[in-house]
Length: 403
Image (cartoon, rainbow, N blue to C red; front, side, top):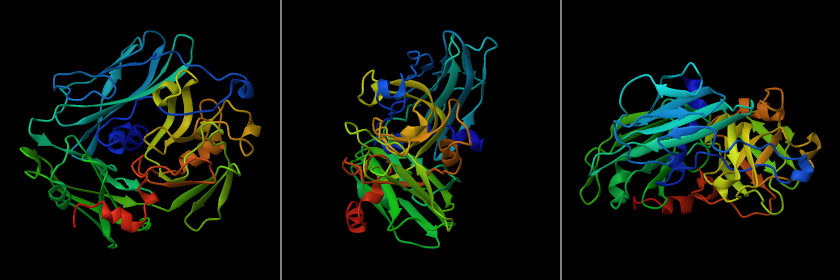
């Protein structure tokens, strides 16, 4: 179950975009057909998922369906996030391989569902798709979707993030009803990004081994006139080892520093001159062993559509990933920046633990920090993913409603 949830992190994406939902098809990839001898193309929307990505207010009698018109489904993982806990939704692929349905039961109210599907089309080409939707919340009630996963082990850069399904007017009352504490104790402060997102972090990265507790006392708290909370729960997570990686876009390298180990330098390829990579501190929020990357989802139109990008690690809500790249020549990494803004590591088709992409993916936790320096782009916005570490402590605390 832990591995399944780890590979299905799309359940958390809504927390990174305020009240919205991140597109189910991922962000960016390499640029230039001439350089790469032609990019792999994807069958258009081969995997079809109902309810649609980003759907809200789905009724309890709604049904999850995953279908392909030909070929076969290889894997389907569905996760339900309910009251800060994650649960795997079991189901089965039909004998003909063309569809998947859950085993039984109606959808749960006030829950968030994510679907991660991998399939082969009729020509044997592999593709992946990730979608998410939320079910109806009773009228005049609000809930907060919580990140990270309850009882998880995370990196030292993890920021506690709440995304509320309704706009919060009484911010102080809601913030007061959420207590984030740690052992050993450190000062933790909240920061509001708009009316539907509230993040918490300490002054500096968490120390390895820290246990963080989140006490939700939102039940009957009035977030807006006539809108009351329904959650009353204690959750928490543990901070694992420290791993902070620094990508130098000018030098085409990534230096990985993990606890007291000797730093390791890995060759990379970052954003090309016309689509540079953000500078600044970013936090890994999702891990996918394989994902589809479609330029249509991030403003690049039909420039690329790669169905089987290996070892993908999301860094921003807007579509920045650190991922394996099997289509670029090996000489690309460490020498030239070629992507639409992502950071590429050498990999092979299908992914391998023996490549730089697989090696880094297997060593990475949700909550690990990746900092980009010497790029010609601006610094990543604090609300783009878990970018709050790009604010100094005084500015962060100024965003709290607890004056």
